[in-house]
Image (cartoon, rainbow, N blue to C red):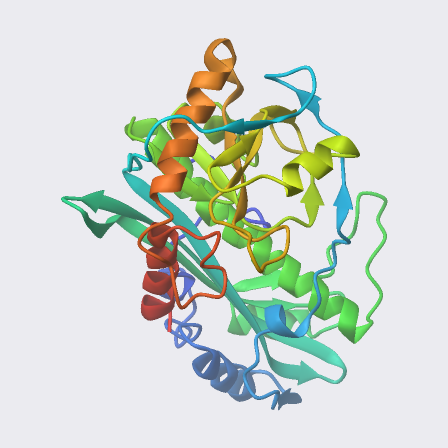
Amino acid sequence: MDGVRSADGTTGVRAIAADPEAPPGASGTLRSVHAAQRHLLRTIPNVRAATGGGLPLERQQRDMELPHVIDAAGAEDATLRARAVPGAPVPAFRAFLDGTQRSEVVGWCGSLPLVYGSAGAVVRERLDRRLTTWERPLVQHRIYAPLAYAPRAELEAALSGMLEDTTKPSADGTIVPPHPTLLLERATLAVSRNRELLEIALAERWCASREEPIMIDGGIGASEVVAQSACAVGVVKSHRTLYAEGDALSIVLALRRGERSSVIRIAPRGRSEVLSWYLRLRDTSGHDALWGLVRAEMCVTVQPRVTERADEISRWLLAESSPLAAPDPRWDRMAYGIRSAEEFLRATNN
């Protein structure tokens, strides 16, 4: 992962269990939840095994971001409007990038949770109408622990290079209090950050070495390199934030299949500016207003030909709505190539 660091400053992105610097006996201890749990119980005094039934924290916790709407500046029309995408859908994406994560409590030090987190990212390349894996997938396994309160020395000795602190002080030196729920949320967020770093690493690698279009699940603004690349297209499937207010929001929610909104400029906090628009992939009859709705992102450097490029990418996205990504519950917004990436990671990371 050239130029990308993980949350604790390390740069390794291959499976951490294979780290040559790992202490004797630690190699391979984090390749699965059960192996990590056995290692912790064997090496750390007074750790109690978690018996949560194996439900990932991502499914137990509610989304902490409240739904909201934000106004956005236009980049194509003075007032946002619906535009029919001209021409027939054309499959043009050469590759698809996505990542997965899973967090699970494996033990307790008193009231303090020890969380096993795994994250991975992969690029699936389309060759002769078949999807294959491009380069090497990036996989990471770690234990996330509140080291401000947990036995730091014992944990570091048992998990050298495979441990991440969930109680790092903020910029003003404040340390998160030892509330069990808050510590679980911090661990899940840390796993999510590390998954994003793995995705960024692969996206930057593709953009540096290839020119063919790549569909990236989610936004592209987290990396300036990716956000400025003409080959990268981000596709956002969830809409906790809607970049339209008032009449503009009504227009977005009323888009019909094969229609897109005007292109807008967005720059979420801490991310690079991109051009974006909403696109309806499927008919909403019998469904809610977000059914089949995605938000696409592309680099701002296409500004002189923004309409032409947005229409072109929209045709690509409409083409990827078939074959269906079923039985995934998000099949109305998910491309089959993205589903292939997720299935690959689940199969190889278990």
